[in-house]
Length: 242
Image (tube, rainbow, N blue to C red; front, top):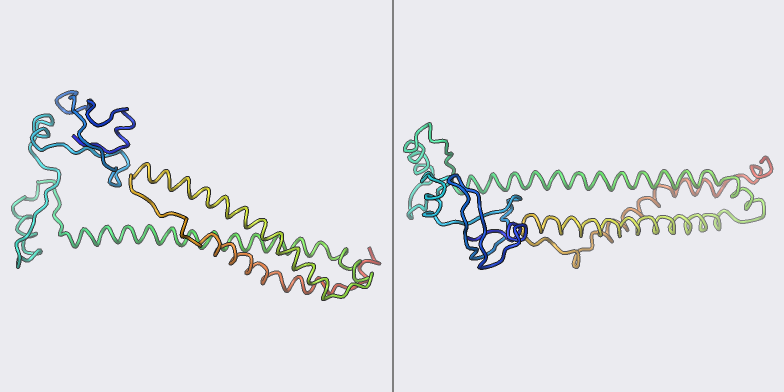
């Protein structure tokens, strides 16, 4: 038999070793001929000959059957004929390859769409949270800014100071988040590769972490720029009042 690499690793067997599998007729020892991927089935897959399947599973009923059409045949007509032949109590469903492909594509597209929406919401939440934290920090420094105004610092210089401080704070926070996000993606990709057996996209050629980092920093700076401009024009008398 051939089994997925995950099953072989779990049972600590290699090519040529014997693997014991539970069957409806009892436990049977099979010799491992090859390994493959999980083919997207998380529990793993096993490939077995039809003769062994009939003997050890004590049934000849197929769980699935593929039909190749001759050139010029109508898939809908053949499908209707197969449904009539199987009968209402067969327990099997009949679908064309085009319908099955569309169903798989629809499910995959829906999943990717939900993940895309979650990704956008996370970026929006990050922008709003950092803008609120940075804006609050600038607003609470009005007294110290008023003291600088009282010492003769021009509002233009104050705006440059606030812009520099904000950029440094945002860059440090976003860079830390980007590094943690990339590390998390590497772990998740490794888990998916282990479960499904399929290779996943590499981050080597992806600029998305840098794009998101630059986007968040730029948007937050634009949002707090108005507050920074207002704070740079704070009245010097505020420092005297304090």
